Image (cartoon, rainbow, N blue to C red; front, side, top):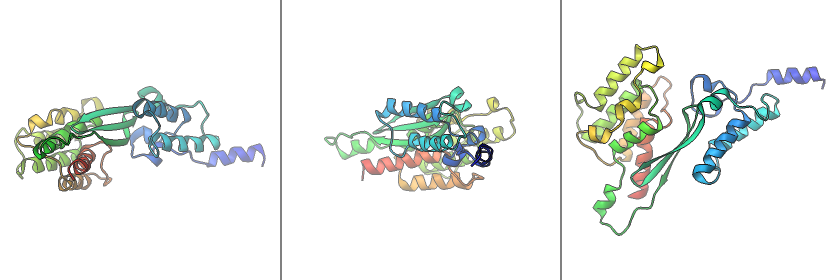
Length: 259
């Protein structure tokens, strides 16, 4: 094969982009995965876990970056501008009985794990139930994992479903979480500047104190919240690290702690 043919073959090939392997949006979705991006994520994972998670974001990014490099579409020392400027992070959020670990590139979630913590077995059953994650606590965890996300209709619907499950009332409480989320979503629809939009953390921070009642998250609660978020998302998808994802993670953890 001539050099000209090789160059034309490379030009015809498409690099593996972030949008091909993760549920991300905006400019990041269209960026090729670069070797230095994967190296940064590996360093971040090693710092938190002490090793690279099998099948986790680092492994997926390394595979994509290797493909892109072998195809001659990126250089070995290349780094995506968004990853380089906005960072690659692995953060921990403590909740009762567990920690939620969130991995992000450029502020967008690419992976999330729930790691249970041991629950003392010498206490009464009522105390074990107290260790279960409540709906309010799961919402507060969302403020950490996806707090910078502008509130949209799918978030508002999920928050309303969560509030209904927590309180047992089908009426939206004036000034409550659901009402605030609906107002935020309506505001964001008519605002063009991102910095003027209301973010999730502004609505759900301190959710436990804002709810008139609360309860431990169950699988049924999670299904209701996930369904609400899906129905109101044009892409029929839940947001990584968002309201539905956090409620679902809490339900799974509660089932494991209190089978």
